Length: 304
Image (tube, rainbow, N blue to C red; front, side, top):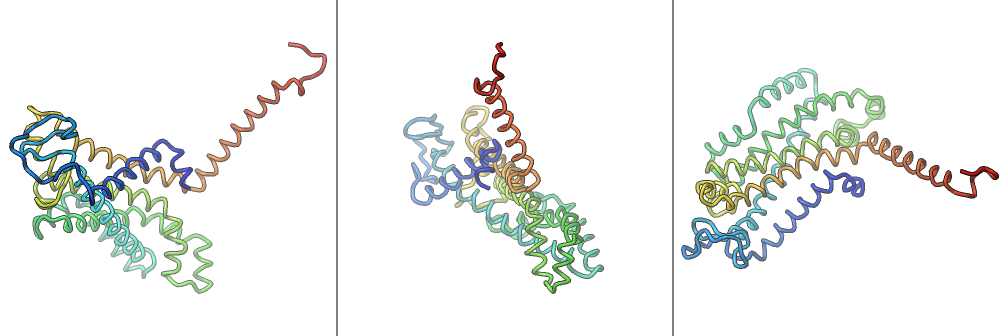
């Protein structure tokens, strides 16, 4: 599975970027080049160098240290929102697939209504009501995208629920929870994986956007979005400074978006079979070419 994942360029890119994010988040717990929140008015807007790898901002803070500390926030938001979205999506999918008909139809209507609200708008509404904090951002994005996962997976789950092996499982006495976790969720895992990776990418973007607007993490929490908000004011004078948080956000979002597609391709048995068949065909063609050029296999008396 891992080998098939990294054999794809998109999968390799996603694994490298997200693995680096995890390593940097772990390193930032015990070490940063400078204090990320320490303002130094004597070293404002210094360029990249040995003392400050990515330079300093208007307050004299070390940008590299702040970015390194912000990896913890990004990772926490992505994982926390993904877990909440998974739980909400599976619960709503179960309610919309394994319950009575009137409950399924009511759930479908409710999902159609809730999915009309954009994720970022829902997060902004909740943060405006409950105050801007990292926990509110995680919960709001998780709930919002959990509804989206349930809405997208509903058709696939209903298709799987009508399959013969699910009917046989129910006939043999397997309960609703057993059918859900033994048959429905595993067979819909590729779809869930893609939606989950999109939920995590959306969470990173939402946290950065909310922090940029002042609704996200507090001032005592390092956030790439808040750093980008601080630096964009001076982008006309110091354009290099806003490059770092912008590039970090773009890389992580791209990696999360591509990870779901790569995992789906690597875990889909139909795609795996096709890849194996193509590989075997290529191997056979090469072997045939080698045999055609072998002197031992050429017809005696025939010369080129």
